[in-house]
Picture 1 (cartoon, rainbow, N blue to C red):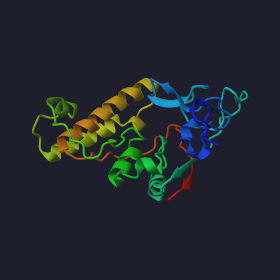
Picture 2 (cartoon, one colour):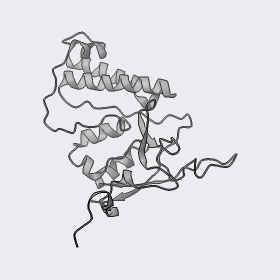
Picture 3 (spheres, rainbow, N blue to C red):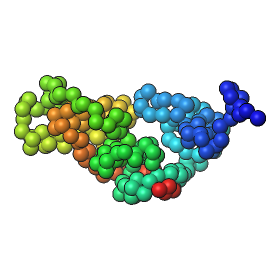
Picture 4 (tube, rainbow, N blue to C red):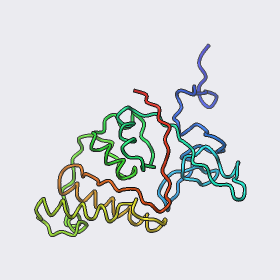
Amino acid sequence: MAPAVGEDAKLATSTLYEENVHFGTHLEVWGSWYDTEKKCWGYACCRVTRQQRRCPKTAPYAEGEAEEDEDLEVKVSRRMADMLEKNPTFSGEVPTPDQEKNWTDAELKNYLHSNGLIRPARTKGEQKPEPTPADWKVLELEPGADPAQLKKAYRRLALQYHPDKHRGDKEKASATEKFRKVVSAYEAIAGHVAEIPAVPACDDGGRKRRWRIVIVD
């Protein structure tokens, strides 16, 4: 009997991307809605950008009931598990083993330190563009500044605009855009991957993501 084709064909669960699987009480899948202000994906059913099992729309919290901080199960490589252990404040999207298998340790560390904002280029070995006067301006340097000045300026600005140091949607979005420009300018001038500084967790009541890690090496 010939296999089903077209709209009637059904994929085995193991062949589906995790983003296409309904999770918890949500009516829509993760990634079905994009928050243009926060610049991140979420659920279309409740407009929540945090991956969590309970959907506030289908299972609303009672008055006075605190929102539970659920563990999120993630399947990762052993290398990724070790890095998550060293970066407990990371709350971005955890890359799958297939996504990060070709990333260097430095690239993976930068991804975690930037809270998922700086993702390595998909194309390996691509030609890097030559630095422009605009790149030097972003780093607040005169063209031709020596490597020591370049590194000092980059670190100062990267810490100043690091998204984890800002609160409020508009302030965080503005800092995120400037942070990306600083990293891009440094990499264009230095000719190699920037080392993104780690920022300690803010003690303003911000929540830490709790992972339930499954190693799939």
